[in-house]
Image (cartoon, rainbow, N blue to C red; front, top):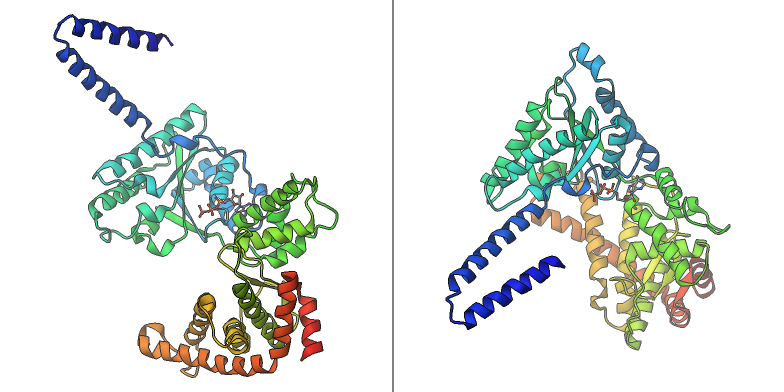
Length: 490
Ligand code: ATP
């Protein structure tokens, strides 16, 4: 307030002097220059500096707050023994562990593991993202790396700790293979500085620093980083299996009131391929659904609806044109009926309520986690993907653009088959295959399935018609109804 009054008074005096004929321009120019200097200083002071924003922010996370990931947790704990028993390891002359690299898909808990590691070892925690070190100006990235290590040591001393963990997320952004970037000099300097800092770490330092880095693309990293003495340990953090998903669901519902019909094990079965972050979002979305409907407990229906939402996106209120709705109903009925024929019991429900990018959706019945697929299963998957468009063509006279995504997936599966040696080409080496040969083999697989689906859709025409009528009336139809229709009409 006082500042504002003084500024107003100053401006008033200046205006008065100017009005009385005094030449005030030198003063005005001086003030503008002063203002610019202050603004630049202010801006620089607040420039995001790696680590500034999350000092000490482990939020008390421990290994018990991380679901699944038993192998990663064990490997990590084992590695952290070096930090916990530093004196012993020093006596034995063991080189201190300097870096641990966590690799794996997004949202699997890499950041959580780094925070838990800091709590487990009683270390100060500082985090930064690889992209914060990427600057247009040469030398700035390297300067920031130096700063980060200095900050970590300072923070540990201030908190009275003997060690600090620096967590660098998306490390591939700053530590990609050298010499490959356009502005490579700057990238290379930043990476070199990181290597220099890591090489400089010493057993006798008053603060022991451990660098933990995370990457979704470890294949992009410069090999120098993975050399012994730098990131000695690489810990794989994978998508959780069924038991892991159940644990994560239990963790994220511990503070939420669940209705008695909730079966988290069933939800874990339905969410194959979900990461920890997906599961956290699922629990949150289910709670939001209950809240929107004014209930104070989360039901199984909320959780199931949240699975769809996380998988496909928000339900849309989009007005779908009548003809388009009919087309979607036929398309989804084609998928559902052929899926039930080829893999009985595989449909949980079918809907023509648009969600996210999808105009309709066949929800598959949950099955145990599968990591392997046989040739006939893969062929059946391709056939089911093609069935939507085939149903449109046979029942409505022509197909539409609605199947582009299905075709893409079908071609992906066929490609996997060729590369896994499951095509007439036999066992192949990808690099030795010409793109034309690969494409021809992929096309042959898809074409064979297309012929099969044509015949199947013709023979199930009545069932597909009946299911699409039912979908137009009810919007969502359960798998049991699909199965009943198949037997009645076929
Ligand atoms: P990214 O690679 O995208 O940075 P990340 O692997 O570092 O992802 P986190 O940031 O650790 O993932 O996880 C994001 C959120 O997902 C967490 O805050 C947590 O709510 C949830 N989550 C992820 N994995 C787990 C897990 N294993 N147990 C419990 N919650 C998890």
